Amino acid sequence: MTTSIAQDILQEVFGYPRFRGAQQTVIDHVIANGDALVLMPTGGGKSLCYQIPAIARFRQGLGTCIVISPLIALMHDQVGALDIAGVNAAFLNSSQNAAESRYVEQQLLQGQLVLLYVAPERLTTPRFLAILEALHEKRQLSVFAIDEAHCVSQWGHDFRPEYRSLSLLAERFAGVPRIALTATADSITRADIIERLQLEQAHCFISSFDRPNIRYHVASKTEARKQLLHFLRTEHVDDAGIVYCQSRKKVEETALWLTQEGFHALPYHAGLDIKNRTLHQNRFLREDSLIIVATIAFGMGIDKPNVRFVAHLDLPKNIESYYQETGRAGRDGDNANAWMTYGLQDVVNQRRMIDESVGSEAFKQSLRGKLDALLALAEATDCRRVRLLQYFDEASAACGNCDNCLNPPAIWDASVAAQQLLSCIYRIEKHSNLSFGAGHLIDVLRGKLNDKVQQFGHGSLSTFGIGATLSEQQWRSILRQLVATGAVRVDATAFNTLKLTESARGILKGEVPIHLRAEHKASGKKTTVKNVTARSNLDDDSVDCLKTLKAWRSATAAKNNLPAYLIFHDSTLTALAETMPQSLKELSAIAGIGIKKLEAYGADLLQILQV
Image 1: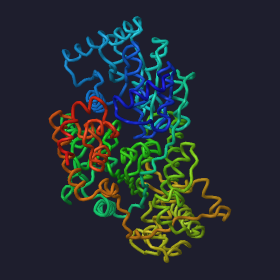
Image 2 (image 1 turned 60 degrees about the horizontal axis):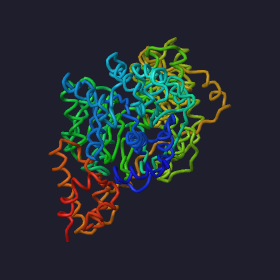
Image 3 (image 1 turned 180 degrees about the horizontal axis):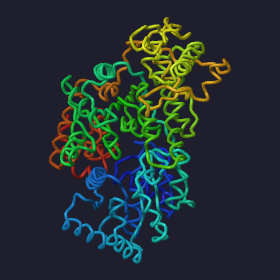
Image 4 (image 1 turned 180 degrees about the vertical axis):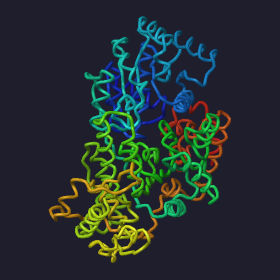
């Protein structure tokens, strides 16, 4: 019974002929009053997992679905998309004045809203809780949907304390089904979500974390700007994308530099005033060929489907952050790139932030473990996708579409070099009763008798010059990989000096062989991510038609103050240009055109498509 209801809504409202993956099973479960925890990758269609049950239960007279979301921008876009699809939805957040908020509350109390989006801070106010209590008494709360549910867990990558209060949903609104959704949660985080939200009896739906359309590439950092510029100019000229940096200062400098290099780039970070942050985000959502340079303050809830690349100029905190941030590319299913460059200083910075963070030693140790997992992914010599999915307890085979699969790195037995480096750290400290940094260590290894080496008498050490056959870049690579594996510790509290760890002992004794990635220059082989037009094999007339459709979409979106993709996705416009439907009935067969959109835009489309 519920399957046909859900299928009808999918086709009628959203214009899609079939569900993807586990969507239908989740939706049927929630329509039937079941609680659920849903893990589904970014771009996997999580929002439909609560929107369709909300519509179905509203039609059954069961009231409004309350969606808890942490982001104002996401609320605006979701409500805008639902409105275009003919679903009465609204939001309550700090962007509204008192009169606007009262009007929404009145709609809610009168049973006019199918979905209402609220922030967790708003949900827990006495005023709003009183409204929810009144609705609950009348059995007019259909579903609670908790989006970005990983925010509830202190073990997750984006913990938000205000999410902890959401345990009251189970305590105060018994009988109302709850669905918690996230794209990123390892087993520890999942267990914490279940405990904090009291979802012990909920069914857990875990979809594949694989995003096969994303190509993962990690490069050791040499000249990061030149590396990024080469990546953009060879693969992503005129594409929309995101560049992540660790600091606000670096965001500003990188955005300015990209602009000077001829790209359309804007900065985004928490230090910008709200007016400029909102302006930059809205421009990114509404414009093609725009690059946002951002800290992690940007991204969660960004639904722009045609982001063709995500680049990291600095190392993220953990695999969950990396997965979620890279997952903002290619949400439309088309090819996209996840590119990252990192070096020793990135490792030092991340370890320092963990050591200086607030929390118990157990919590810090958990963060260190997560960072170590990311470093293992960055230094991997086998398939990166296998490593990434393995972190989320998902088995897979080599993908053939990451840098390691496409251009397998050379591996060399670095056991002797590792012993030389570790021995040099040991002898320098023993000789001087002091620790030194990477630059000085490499000078000693390579036999450079500069002023500092002479000052401390390190030219007399037995390790002086034993590594002269290797370049500075090679030694930095070896050191970076030994730091990543935990054999060397960088003391950020003492000018980034180097210390041996207990695990260095086995390497020095020859008990633990060391095989490392050999540094090499990029092959120069171009792996361009093709655009949607090229992949669809459109002829010249169809390409012209697609351009006309996109121009019409842009104008329509601007008139309604909405991102263009909320009118129609690129895939829908491409299908129109390929098939050239000539009637409303033929238009209705195109994926992404529901009844409301057919009524609103059908005549315009037929005028463009007439042959």
